[in-house]
Length: 261
Image (cartoon, rainbow, N blue to C red; front, side, top):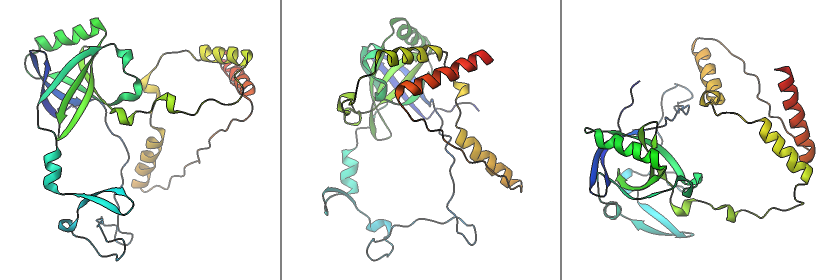
């Protein structure tokens, strides 16, 4: 199925403007279920009710409130919420270019492709320049009443835009608890390095699938055909013991696998 653009805009770098189309670079494949009536297997609706009385609350009686302290709310009207939205814009503005290693991976959120919308000459020239210079552009734009910050890069000859999380959402490793207990021994460090080197390989995306989704969909398809499939329970393997013994077992298992191959 051909990709469909979800938004159009103008990529602005200084005085240069390039018309682009935005395509989602990922697809949500979560298995979703409908909520049904247990007796008639008809879809049911969810309603908002008063927590104390249990009575249904109509939409025109609902207000948005932010709890500033237990039991105390600041109420915002629809008009106030509308006035707080960012000004609509179709410009994706690039303010600066930075080396890729300056943006840590936990900042990246959702990826999009930017494709040319008309003139392709400047578009592919920019994609080639980003590839040659090995830099990422820091982008700012508004889409569907929300402000975004993103990283613009080149990917397989096309422009690639990844939304970035806000500073308040990213947790630094400095905020984690300090390591406790004895430091790894020289023997454990050597074994760990050996284990990593023995597992060296190349990433192949086709090797990584949502096994749970596949099991659920296979089960659904078999039931839809009138069959009564049985699923074996998935058992997790637990490892216990010292780091030394765990690494030794892992290395021995890898060596057996290589000898068998």
